[in-house]
Image (cartoon, rainbow, N blue to C red):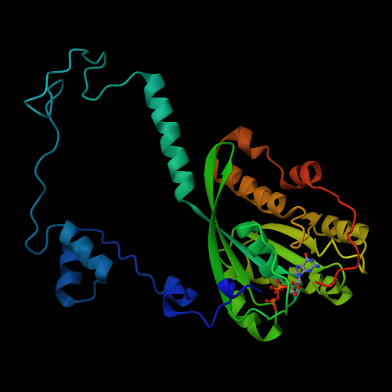
Length: 307
Ligand SMILES: Nc1nc2c(ncn2[C@@H]2O[C@H](COP(=O)(O)OP(=O)(O)OP(=O)(O)O)[C@@H](O)[C@H]2O)c(=O)[nH]1
C-alpha cells in the first residue's frame, strides 16, 4: 500500500451518492422551464435551462452566421473558392472525414473508462496500481487500504488516447458495502488473487458472485493471479486458467513486484473498452482473451520472495 494511494473515508465530492443526486432537469417547453424557475423547483442546472429558454432577463445571442459565401469578417478577403454545394464553410469530403476522425479521437480521450481493482486484502491491488502508474514497487510493511480511491491514467491505443480511471478498493470485508456502490458504473474489473494464498483464490468465486449481483452485465472482467514472482506459490497457473475458462473471463498471472504483465493487463482493458466505444467494426473484432494470450509474458519465478 502506498501512502499516495491511501484513502481515508471518501470526501463528499467523491462519493457515489453525489452521482445519484445529480440532477438533470429537462424541460419540455419554455413554459415548464419558467414555472420551475419561478416556483423554485428547478435545480441549478434546471435554472440554467430556464435561463436558456429566455427567463428571466434572457437575451438571445447575436446572430453568428454570415450569409452564404460571404466572409464573416468584413476586413477579410472573400472566399474565392466557392463551394460546389453553395453553402458556407464547405470542405472537401477528405478534409471533413479527417476532421471527423480527429474529433472522434478527442471524444474517446474524454470518455472516462472506470476500472476497479478487486480481491481479498493483501493480494496486491494497490501495488499493482502503483507499479502501473509509477513503474515502482514499494517493499516494506503492508498497510491495508481504507475505503476507496482512484487515479487517472492516460494510455495510447493505436495512437488514440484512452483515459482509464482506476479505482483501488479495500479488500477487507468491513469495507465491502462501500465498494459495492462503485461496481454499478464500472466498465472493467480487475479481479486479483495471490498465487501464494489459497484462500484468496478460493474466494474468487464469491467475488464473481458479487460482481454478477452489483456490476453491469457487460462489464469487462479480467482475473489476475498476482505475486507470480514468488516461488512459494500454492495456486498453480493451470488452476487460474481453468477458473477463468469456467467463467469466460480473461486471465493472466502478474507481479506487481517485477512488473510482469502489469502493463499488458491494463492495456488489454483499455483496448477492449476503446473498441467497444469506437463503434468501428474493425475495432469490435478485438478480443481481450486473444490479446492476453498473445501478449502475456511468462517469466520464471525469482528466489523465495520476502515481499
Ligand atoms: N512478492 C510480491 N509481493 C507483493 C506483490 N504485490 C503486492 N505484494 C506485497 O503484498 C502486500 C500487500 O500488497 P497491497 O498492494 O497493499 O495489497 P492490497 O490488495 O491493496 O490490500 P488491501 O489494501 O488490504 O486490499 C504488500 O506487502 C506488498 O508489498 C507482488 O507481485 N509480489
